[in-house]
Image (cartoon, rainbow, N blue to C red; front, side, top):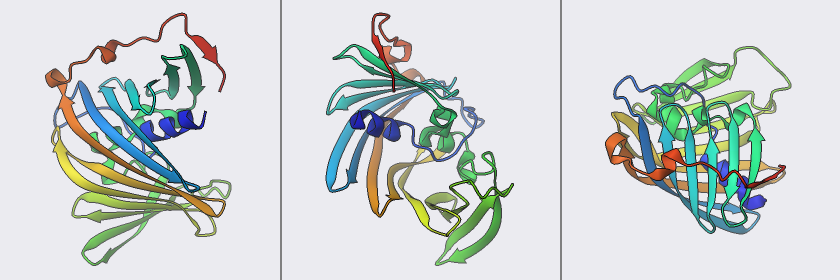
Length: 238
């Protein structure tokens, strides 16, 4: 089960929100390869797989290492995790799992200008410069003391976001994300390397993910775009 949660965390990186529209270039579908290494509590796990992303918001992630696992998700947050070896499927329903919050959607829709923060209820409160970097600080538009994340810092190098951190009401940093190795995909700038650090209960987990071998539209050919979980798969409750 820990492997399943690590896989979902990798594939549904929660960095923002936005619609799956490409005003500069229409991308009907996209494929990419990814590798992720997570270190937590002295243990390390490496995941390798492929992404199959469609304009309608449907996304399939096929993990190939350390075991085969198929994750299907959509913009509504409906997620199915299928284990071909066991012929079992786990079902999730949570808006936070929407494919619109993935790194692919945020950057390739142009929402990287504010990383989708405006859409999810944050407003820019302050801007400054530090060593040629543009620093923006954000807070909830509608104050909510119960909200875990109270403030967000977003830093740019030129027009590229390179760093974010999230803090709680006590100014404690809960999460840091670093974006690097940008390349242009479908006329949009995309970071092909991210490092995500999550702090929790006196410990931290570090996940580094790299993306590559991007293919768009006619070059993105795969039967996984039409993949369906077998009807006889046994449902397991999460």
